[in-house]
Image 1 (cartoon, rainbow, N blue to C red):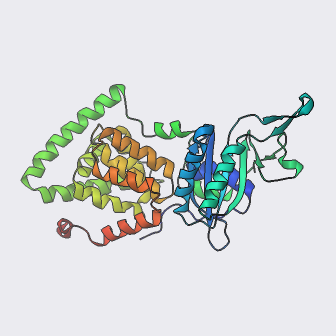
Image 2: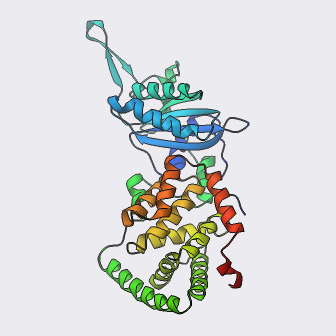
Image 3: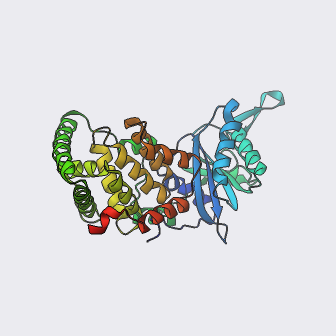
Length: 357
């Protein structure tokens, strides 16, 4: 099986890390605290990246402690702590009525450093990203004084180029990420529902006559739709094709085999298909493709999209077992390598129904 689509990228300095945050998260963060794990022989290989909204002072220690525990699951050689905020500089009163400017959110940064130290994880740098510029909280030089800062690197970074090569599109914010798989509404929704239930009714009758033969037909329908969605094909599945895939994924055997598509040459096409089925599928049939989308996103390191997709699956069908299991795994920061190994094991031992397919 191929390695996951997410490329291996090394970032050599703090400026590159500051500029890379949108690509590491999958969207442009706002008012956020971000921890970036670094490892590998050089200590510059990007690992797990975790984020939270900037907390209120009373919740700061708890929030960053949870982030530190999450990033620790990647066994990093070091971590960069970054704050993304448009907050103005803090002002510390001085005798005589003057005040001394300081970078904002130092309390959050301090709590993060303390939490990481408690886990014996070195902090490589602490950064502020604001208004297209970046600062290091620890830098004593004039370039990092509150009113200064350095411009974020221009041009196309290595991570940006790698992200484009793998088809990742950075969303404006998390809401834009959610909009990519938002349900249809209006006439489009009504039309999709009508097509879906007609297809489901017809295929259900066929399944009653020969369930194994119908499972094989369903798998063929999935593969055909994946090929249509391959990058560069210019194809987009029709409503009828989407309905056929939704029906197919309702069979757990087909769904579990579809999980393994995230490992091979068709990973990008499969992810595009799952996104289309999530966006266009009526509830509760959208829960299965949304969960498959979460798996594909997590394997290529896009935790933001994985969480958005899982939220969609569980909103549609709160009892959906695979989505609940995956949600627990993501909450525990299951490494993509472990998830990949699980899927590879499934691919090596297909259900016997496929032996004659």
